[in-house]
Image 1 (cartoon, each protein chain N blue to C red):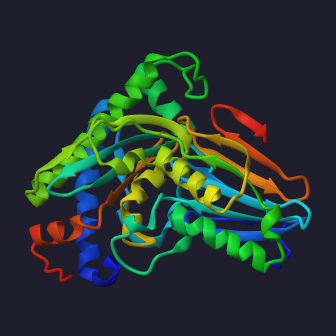
Image 2 (image 1 turned 135 degrees about the vertical axis):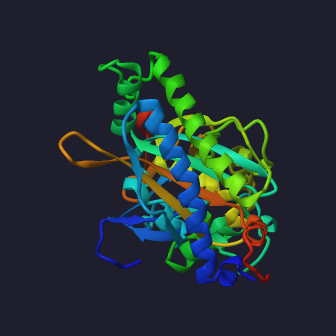
Length: 213
Length: 165
């Protein structure tokens, strides 16, 4: 039995709310960190084949900066905060007031790397604690890890557990945006929440929607 | 298989077979392993993008053969021989199986890269297919492309750049 088959529209709405609350808190944290207004787009919750998931944010080969963690506890999964290298550079330049910083320069173990990890830590922490408050589930995040590599190579870790059940993933994708001075809205990163299939009944039940196996 | 594109793409948990002058490619290999098996005389090559070492890890549903090393390697060999490759001439080149994250807590699944590599090698040994080149392990993602005309495997990684095996 494929776990995807049991997902009803109401379940997708619930997951949208999960993304909404989680990323909303993260956007607030980021606004405070950068002292700028950060907004979020309405989360997209989609059931998609792995091959399609691998092509999000510019393709599986695209180099990205990622801060990711494992979620364990009453519900499990993986969370990824993903930015293009250019977005991540802009972030750290603002945060550190260092206009020359770039993630392209890997040799210099610049303090920007740990700043990025710390920022990912704060953002995913606010996402998860909001999620935990909302569902009343105990969630334990692992220490977030920074990776600068191909998107596909990174995100495939979030698909491993799911791949034991299906070739499709339920992708909760929320985009953070910032309105620049020239009124142009720029993308500030993606949150991808990939819950393990075993967690869905727990989450739906916690939020009062039945889910039959 | 007989399409007109020059580069045939193989997705995650997917496989395909090409005939020169086509080349075959898969991108964004992390802990996954890209297995190329080819017949250099017939100039036919197959590629499978393996995610997990063993099909016994599947918990439900119909199994996608290409997802697992123990089913994917035999499946691509079968497809190759059906496409005109001779089994005694088959050779292999493999890449991938990185350990991208440390994740101190967490399940064994997060340390799957080396297990994938080992399972692929075991299957190739069973099929008596020699491994002529490999670029496995490490902590970087890889994109690979194989050219059946030259039997060269092109590998690109973010940290090490381009190399040819």
